[in-house]
Image (cartoon, rainbow, N blue to C red; front, side, top):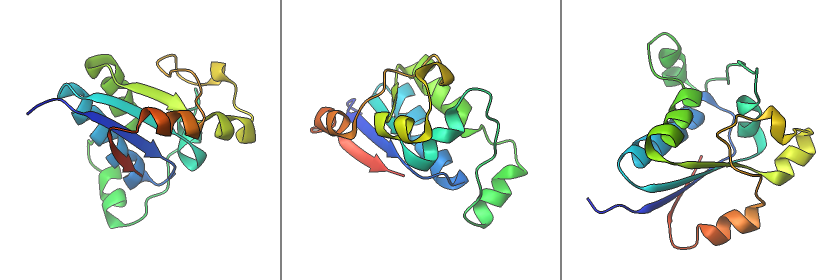
Length: 130
């Protein structure tokens, strides 16, 4: 399969959506695709350093995952960066609204971006939203 460009916009704070976004990023990146992840709104808070808060499940599947040894969304995103060279960007507006400093985010995050810049960069890519 020929590598492609994948852009992922994550705004949900639900376990299932965070998990699926992380799985798309991880599998896409380790498959040789150019992956960019944009974390905003309810999703961003789950990546603040020191936060081990569990996002709420939307339904039965999320509850089932909690009892299994499924790799967590945080480690999948980090693996996407380390193993597949994915890029993760926090939303600058969400950071301002939630008063999150760049130093409070993982070191593998790129610089904060505005949505306009992210969408401009995503112009010729597959875009997934969660």
